Length: 197
Image (cartoon, rainbow, N blue to C red; front, side, top):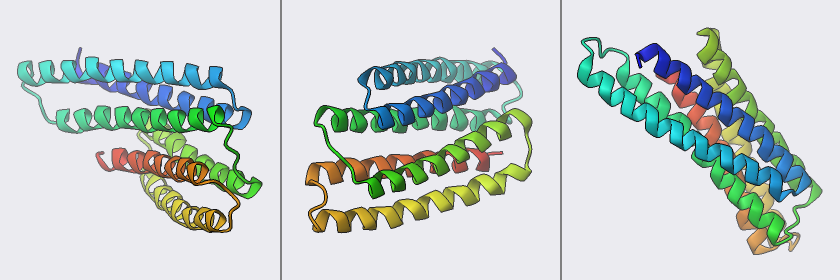
């Protein structure tokens, strides 16, 4: 496998992560274990692809005279896999929420959804950047990553206030904080990937 083939498979990995994020959103809103289980199955496929591509990159680095783009390619593959890990962590927290019948306030749900949709925009733009090479997207992705980080910070504080007011349980608050953090991390990884190129 050459570098272009590895890169194409890495972009397919990112596509799969984007699809997983759509399933997570649906599973969260509908409180459905089956949807979340499907998302987790796909995340395992992302992990398997990363392991296979890492081996291909190592083999290419030993056998190729042109090693120029391999470090960035290796980092890109690893970061896309980390995005899958963040998605898996989100799935696990939402499964706990469903199993424990934890409820978030309407305000909390709206704030999480706003943050999540903003993160999805980062991933969507990342995919477009990887597929088209449109460099104008780089700063948009990075700026959006900062926007998501700001939303995470604002809505963490808002949810802490709801906890203090007794509007949610400590376990519910913990799940909510984790979900916000994993969402922010997904946007951060998107920004870090475009910085490689």
